[in-house]
Length: 531
Image 1 (spheres, rainbow, N blue to C red):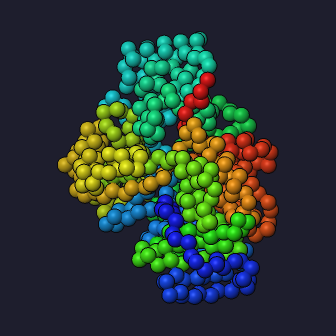
Image 2 (cartoon, rainbow, N blue to C red):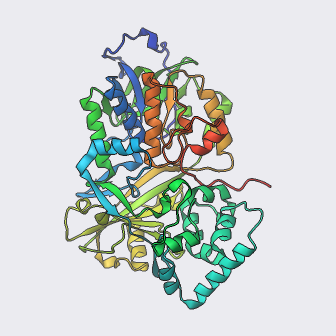
Image 3 (tube, rainbow, N blue to C red):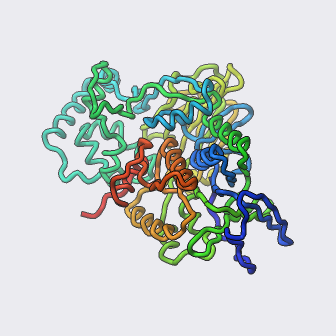
């Protein structure tokens, strides 16, 4: 993903405009100031994550020449990449390949085909030194909680149903009304606050309504007993999905394969090139200007431009600069950051789960991935295992600022504390930091994005797509669908508003800007609005 930085200095010579370029003709000019000028592309794409690479493949399928410019010097896939350490492969978070969109599923199958594994979902919750099945299985949960606490849960649930909290404003209110306060305290409060760094009483109820839609205590109980409850229109409750596809070598295998197809089709994917300046004339984008690790700049010229960069960086890179109101709006957009401590364990088997949610407040750890259970080929030595310990943080806080050695020591202690693996079995480890993993929906984000969108609408050849490109916390299928539609706009195959792609990667024509903003991505907590 393209990182954030300040703008480069404005060139004294006039910017090259699109009208100067002959169609589909490559040229490269080296300037004395070490800047290369390359073009002309049908499209220049910033970011080689799922959105950027999906758009590039769609364009090359139609014979259109494009270039993808990526800040990372080694890997494609963005947050869906696969990192490698001494032969051990690991995700930045776990990435299930599941979508309700037939088009997205067909895309995945076309690219990887028999390289997909079918994986059973086995995930549990760690709480009070016990492991609970997730989704919750009432018999399992009641047995492990014991009769006294189980009675309290039942009484709390009945009380909540008879006398619900009104008005229902916060995430806490929403969950308590449907599960009771006791179960809320056990299974919802701590983990949510770890992930988002804010109290559940300050998170708006609409996030819970979207994130946990279709799930209730009664449905969970009947699901555990294998009693089917038809949902509206036969819709699958995503929270209860029990099986998913997964690439044999991790999610990065998908995006490395897409990169290769783009390049085989005449496109280009260039790594180690952070877009640092976006030149425009007030009506059209003229160039994306990148800088490489040695400080050399390249000006990419094209007819169309697609950004999957964080919106904050996109606006800061504009040259001439965006108006003060727009830059102020962009500077206020916030992100939740993420780091993974990978531990190599001297054991052939550790625990059966694909991943475990850590709800216990006694550790800072939020989630554990067992990569060998996602795919055996994620681990080079079958006598060992690798675990990904996930910590949610803000860039610059104490967790983010810890040395790798201290983080590995913290991970070793905490994995021992919760009883998954003895600290003595950990033989190696590494740390990966992922800035801007989750766009944050705070109480001002909606107005800020609206201001930015209004200003960007003046550019007739700029498209936005993807999670950070639209400040939407979404799954990769949603990012892909926004990119497919953006590419079709570039191709002249339609006039799509990518903001009208909903959380299930479906495009809906109806609804104005406000309605479409709520459709366009997986829900993220926002603060309770003032009464």
